Each structure stands twice: as structure tokens, then as C-alpha cells.
Image 1 (tube, helix red, strand yellow):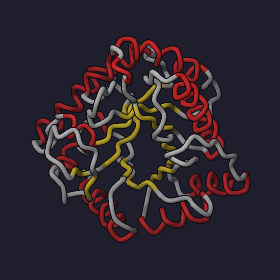
Image 2 (tube, one colour):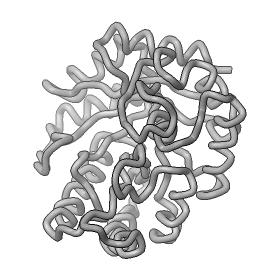
Image 3 (cartoon, rainbow, N blue to C red):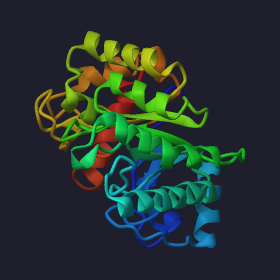
Image 4 (cartoon, rainbow, N blue to C red):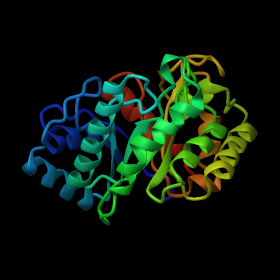
Length: 283
């Protein structure tokens, strides 16, 4: 399948019991889950029975699974406690991803807090994050996918070119990839509305990080205009990005085989509509 389409699914009550039931209702071909409170530092143990069922049912249905790490993680923070907790939290997400058979863990690229220069923050990213990448030695370990931000504050990575210094800091590690969030790159200033600019954005990304590094797309429309630096997702086709941009992205060579996961507003009915719409835009 050129582009499996799915969504981020709620897992309260059980990864398999509730998460995959929701995915089936969406007709999802890919799923993304949290394995911890996304707004906390807790690192809960999994439920082995649910883990095994989730892994087995995803395999049976040819559904690719992905994990989103907690939002508090920031390897560029000037607060030592935050940097240390970021290591612990991401290591937990990577371990849990392996346990449930997920292909990758998405983590936000963070910001340089405390007024520190970007170079200092990126040096800390290297110090804290490279050892975690080096721990990914098993064949069933997930890849680590960097997700750029909408460009708020002292963001370390928002435009496609910003992935360059970030990848350099991490020695272009073989387990390193990219999760491209369409709302984020649009908010950061890439005008995806023009199909030519959508294609150019992907060309720039490939030119910056290399071929094969784009592993996942967060397919989200935007409630705000291009360059607004606001991370406010809209349902596909109802925001300022529009359907044509997604049609163009789905035809670019860099997206061949890359799953799309929605993180859009609303309940199950709106999510199913977004999944159906994106499936209809596939070549």
C-alpha cells in the first residue's frame, strides 16, 4: 500500500481493548498511541496481556503502530531536572514501543530555553539524546522520529532546513527519522496550499536529511494561516491548508510507503471522515 492512513487513537481502558476497537471503527491502516500521560513524567509499566494482544492484532490486520512520546520532553531545556526527566521519559517510550511492536517513537524537537544560544542547546541534545539512539541495537527496536514544531518561542526545529543542524548534532544516526506534521510546517511558514510549494517542501526535507528518513506524516489541517506559528489542528479540508496540498503530498516520491496519521479535532465521526477523505486522495 502506497500510504496507509489511520489516526491517533485513545487507549484508556486498554491498548488493544479500546485502542484497536477505535482504530477498526475508523478503518485505520495505521495507529498512533500514547504509552504514558502525554502531559506528565510518569513511566507506567505496560499490561503484558494487552501488549501481546495489541501486537498480534496489529500484525494480523497489517496495521503499523507508532508511539508519541510525552509533550514535556525537551532536550534543549536549561533546567537540569527537565533534561534528566526527558531522558527517562523517552527511554520509557522507546522500550514500551518495542514491547507493543511499534515501528517508531515520535518526539518533539524542543526549544532552547533560558535565552541560551541554539548551539548550546543542540550540544545538550547531542549529549542527552545520542546515547538513547545508541541503545537501539535490537532488530525490533523502534526508530526515533523527530517532529518539528510550529515555530513558537526559541524552537530548535520548525522549518525543514532546521532538521539539518539537529541531524548533524546526532551524527545522522541510522535509527533517526522524521515525522512531518503538516500543520506544524505550515504554521512555521511552508505554504503547502500551492501544490508546487508542497512538493518543494518535501524536496527540501529530503535534501536536508537524506532519502528514506521520512517515516511518518501527521496529517492535520490548520485553523490558522501560513506562518502564524500557532499549533491549532483542523479537520482535513476545513482549514487553511486544504485538500489539494494533501493530494500533492501523497504524490511525491518521498512519501512512497509513508503512513499518514490524523490528529484532528472532533470525535469518531469526524475522525472517520478525515481518514476516508485522505484515502480518497491517494493516487
